[in-house]
Image (cartoon, rainbow, N blue to C red; front, side):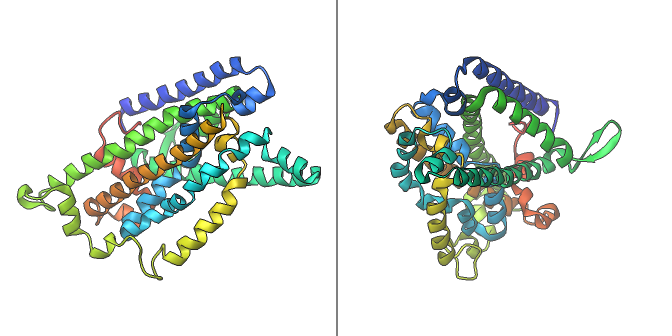
Amino acid sequence: MVTLDYIVLAVYFLVVIAIGLYCARRNKKQEDYFMGGRGFGKLMQTFAAFGAGTGPQDPINTGSFTFSNGINGMWGTMYWLFVTPFYWITGVWYRRMRHLTLGDWFVERYESKKLGGAYAIFGVTFFMIYGSMFFSAIAKTAAPMIGDSVDLFGNEVDLRFVLVPSIGIVVLLYGMLGGLAAAYFTDLIQGICIIALSCMLIPIGLNALSSDPELNPGGTHSGLEVMADQLPDTFFDIIGTSASEFSIPFLIAIVFSNLIGVVVQPHFIATGGGSAKTEHDARMGLVIGNFLKRFCTLGWLLTGLIAATLYADETQLLADPDQTWGYASMQLLGPGLRGL
């Protein structure tokens, strides 16, 4: 990465902290802080659902699985596709609860403060595990761009021990200052960036395939044709055999598991519709936001296939396929766009 990339990152961090400060001044009561005053329309609810459902581990996993297994690898993220239509039903639940947290709902529904306390412990544990996945994924993306270590006061320090605390501090600052509104505005900015990046890598990568003299002598084939020629046929099997990474029995089991489990995830009372202005806004935001993620998954899938064609012999990716997304971004994007 070059200076321009770091400027992009610095500007982004300053913007999200400014958002936190701005939203902090608008929060007048508890409901404003935790639910944004329940005043968000379709646009904000859409990107809130998209942001909550699209963690940094998603393009990492999709790129990694696709690099190793082909199209079948998309199911590492795409299995949520079959759950998404049910969000039209669940989107109104949280709007009608009128609670700030699901723990509050459990206390009222079962008349048990102990059950509410148990749910609170579950929620904290859930977010600790969930957050650790996010931060691990961020490190996997950044390592091919920045390096596995950075120079800090003359000492070589593992990148994870510098990057993760730095990002964590920024997230805590704007989250604690501005509450849910700050998170939603940040999701809007991040969502636009993620969609742009998911689309941007595809034409650049296909152009790299068609212009590669070794993969396409004479330049007579398109990028998609080069990909089809170079990759084995098994890479284009959408549903593999029972021995595949993602078989039909696995998909059926995980879909039912997610359908039952997603409705009690701690953040779902807010992003699932509780902060929406109307019930229709809750439904539209939750469904459209999650279908946007399915659209982006196709972009991550194609990027993984492009990387599997361009960098098939790259020892760094063969040793750690989780670096596929970051490595492809580093190789294909220009200065400034890498910072995105």
